[in-house]
Length: 84
Image (cartoon, rainbow, N blue to C red; front, side, top):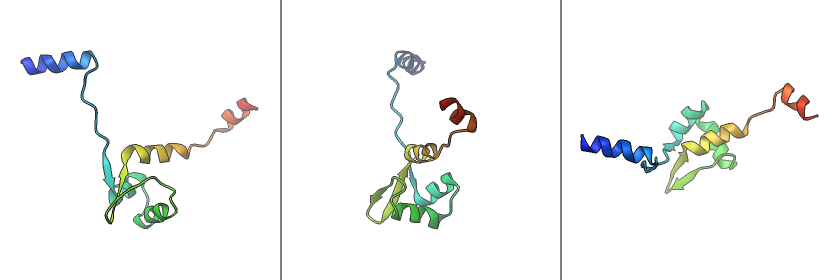
């Protein structure tokens, strides 16, 4: 009971534990992006996507993949017309 109270109080005052970023393997990254594995390897080769390499293994931060997807956003016709 005491641990529950401490957890609730610490969450209320903003002392919650920081969430560690999640690393994905290349297979997981391909699945996350809905791309074929060779496509992801080609994107790494062309340095189109952020990656981390440890030895012979490639790793991708989930947040980097989310940013990669967000960078591909295109404006709608309405947004373009309001800027003119």
